[in-house]
Image (cartoon, rainbow, N blue to C red; front, side, top):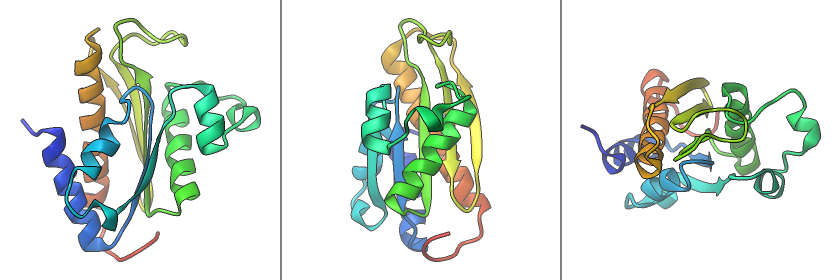
Length: 168
């Protein structure tokens, strides 16, 4: 089984080789994705920054997403995750933006999603989204699953995109 550290090292190598950059917006993963990417030696070549967007206050303060931008959107959905990924990419001027939003547990979130539910998104030369459903109430295990899934989505996007240098 691939670990978070292994996939972070893989995507770090790909981003470095392509001279591309990443910015991260996390919610229920709580910073695990950023930590994994930053644990790779040489991360300063590709990691521009990240935000743990756990609340509406954090969303406003860190990504400048207010009521107008949220009109018609509900957190913990694929469109919301895509907006987070696009916004973090644009705010940091990175090649890629990735985002995660969900309910780690042990209970569901206030939007009606059960524990173990997450939506993840990739924005860049290729855009992807996915829904994760673990069926588990184990908060720490779900956070690990969400972080691993988001890094895998990034790896998939990098693998399917022809190599080119710099910004999209």
